Length: 443
Image (cartoon, rainbow, N blue to C red; front, side, top):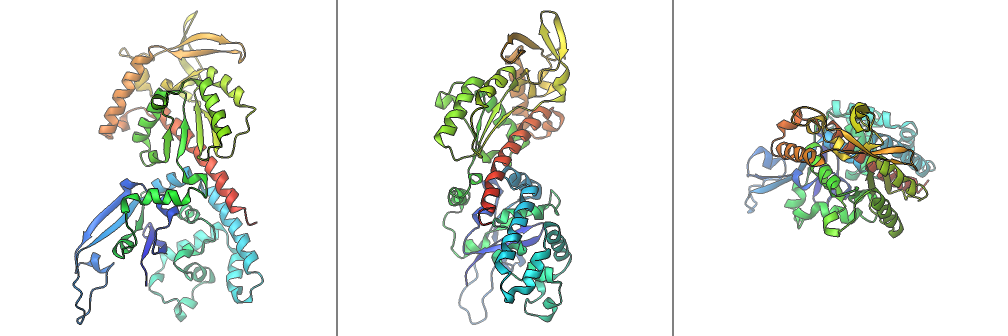
């Protein structure tokens, strides 16, 4: 008979797979999302999963484990966006899949009703069908009954498939289904992947390695299944971004891996990173790669050297984003302290650490010091003064916010929010290119 694992979003069953996990679904969870509860015979929770023996059965009911992975729709949307499954990408994939389905069934008279539904099906109409299903009580209706046949053709189409047809969404990848469904859900609604039946049936040997197993299965199919390699200009940038993600986006941190400067004895600086990007391109690295340059003059010059390099689809090269806060920032030059826009000329990572960190003990913003004029770029290069003190204040803030999330609410994380957001968008964009390439293969 087999065992099933099932996915639920906002309490709605979206689909199941038989005798194994769906690796695409599994990658939406992290090890920290795993929950295990012991179910005792006779309880309502136990009866929901396991059939009790009849009077003539000598089998004795025993305790069983309920094993689920659970998180929220908001977190799943963030993870899907990072993996390239944006709403726009999922809607495009949906339309491409409809074209494939219509071509497949257009000559088969046995599927006339299905073909009629497909010809009118759009992402918007599919979501309307989801709304109707959520508002009804269709789980109790037998699929062969007259009551089921009285439902609208769209709802019959969406509910009439097998376990793995995922509400009739024809897209290749179930993550498109989940991404579209999440548009209807609140960010705090639960996403639950229930593996209880698989565990009880003995189909899973090593539960601790499920996410790694899913990564291994999908690794050869798309770069989106692999961790994103992040290149920064130095060890300080790496340490700050990694630490900030633990505060601002802990649910995404495991999807990234950063260049190890100390262990690999890698040289820092914008020029060295430009050489690293060229080396990665030449080596044919298959992972997604995001190279993050400072938002200053030195980085702009290094990017000129990369302008002639044809980057593969899995590469993205970006600079730290401009911040409104830095449009009028104190700078120190020959004429003393003058406020100026330091975006693009002096915005190293220290200027993204928050106004609370950039102010010294007397409450003054730590100024940028103009160092020299870059003739090639026709602009000055600036460096923040007293970098050591600024970094020390940030490390103290980071430790405080990691140990107790409450202070993070009152701290200034705007700069790092923007920086990490830019990183996630760049990583998601590279994945979307790969995903849409796969979707278009059969057209």
